[in-house]
Length: 129
Image 1: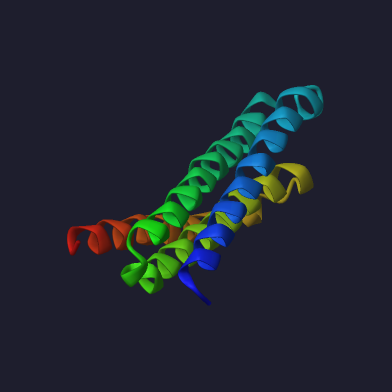
Image 2 (image 1 turned 135 degrees about the vertical axis):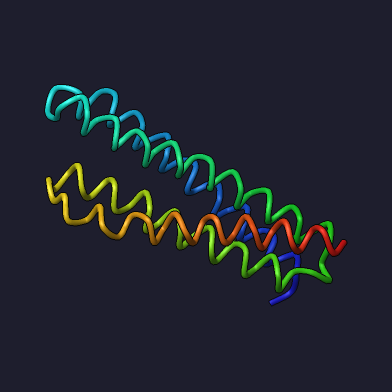
């Protein structure tokens, strides 16, 4: 895949994640507020907040692909780690709250580790610039 297409797809993916984070935040603030405890609502809001941060990060990574096309494969790995991280981290928190399945909290750290690894790989990739 050429770098322009990769960059555009990463920006589009990031924008979709940000939009979903806004929707999740609104749903939590308006739809869930009367249905769950404040503690569970806080967990849901954490999932929305981290989805927002990492959606914006995916937009940034897409822009970096345009700036440094020679590093596009490394940026692609960063995007995979961030995307998987947000899917597992935020997704498990959303499911934990919506399905009332505390056991799902056991997989949340896997998503956190993937996000941390994505940020570390981004730092390492940029340090080599």
